[in-house]
Length: 162
Ligand code: FES
Ligand code: FES
Image (tube, rainbow, N blue to C red; front, side, top):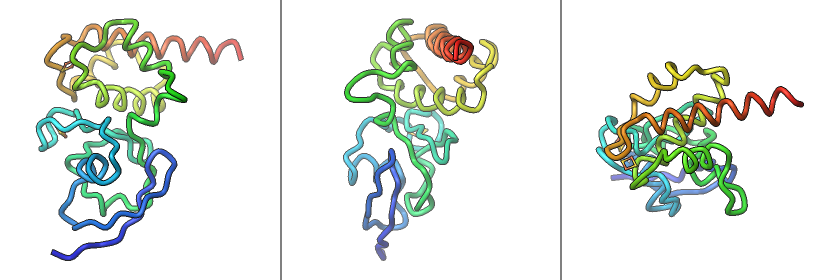
């Protein structure tokens, strides 16, 4: 099969990748760019473990061909922490016991990051509905909802005092 040279913008860095058009974004992220924070579960769009942001919108990287997102703004879980420090959303997951094995966590983090950016006033019921798109087999969803809700509340408070 023919190969193509594409440019991918991931976490603010431009990468040149030579790839066959059949390869998924999640495979290119993990195997070519060595960004292994994005996980692979079902590989057919059901579990959400592979969720990344594409131009700010949460998307399944296992259902996206890498050649489709040339020049898009792609964000993975590696973009969240700064200098080895957790960002506020990651810290909220830790503080609220929103993770156990952690396999699903990068997907939930990117789902929540994208959702809260667009919906800073999200209610707990809305958050509960949004997280239904991703699978977690360990926690039940209550602590994940608590974590996202607590981060949203902190961000709203921070906005108030500015
Ligand atoms: Fe992509 Fe499950 S690995 S949705
Ligand atoms: Fe284990 Fe979610 S923390 S699958």
